[in-house]
Image (cartoon, rainbow, N blue to C red; front, side, top):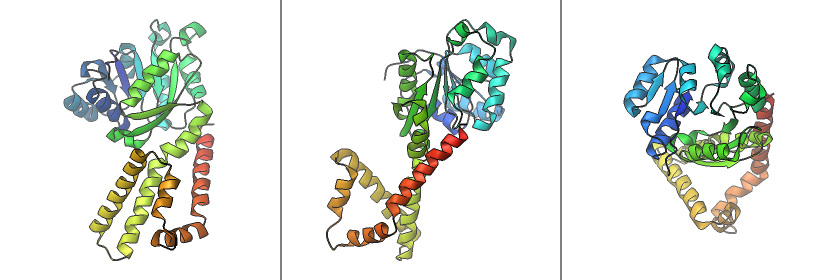
Length: 284
């Protein structure tokens, strides 16, 4: 991966903030000296500084002023206060250099980010502050994430490409319209929980069938891992692969007769649709 050669600041030193740090360093996208992070927890900042040899800042505005790209990795419920602390600084309205804002806070629409960030600025200054909203998922913590992103009217093709480059250090990314981020949230943002739920069910079933917990976990984990690898490498649709395992009158068919009679597929689609609906509710 080519180096980005930009100073990047991260507000929020939680798991996702650290995931960004580790991914950008391990991929060679940035040198540690180009990375900055801030958080209210001094001990957390000290630990990250020791681990990654990056720059830390107790003051969010100091980080904002220093960096060309700002990643907002704080919890949605504190986002407004964090941004008000930034925009409340007298120097904020003197913005003269372009800065790309990337938000990974779930449920915070671009419009709200604009209302907070652009309030003290005139239109020409606002144009120097493009915003990209991102919906990542937790496998980004192990560099296997899936993210959806959408930029506002000031985000150029180059800005989108820059954000995509950062996100690809942690996995894969797709660009969508902002209204589609609710579907991204339901499908891939919440998606790991669905996979964990399936694993949970299979492990419980294995224990019910008489296996000790460790054996049930091993059987389940390797089966899911193998199935995913087969799906990735065979390039065949999952329904075809499922049919190849399901022999007429066999054990797998017997299992699916129970699943189909209980409308499991329809219930899952309904559940994911409800997750998308809830995402829309939270974004209002």
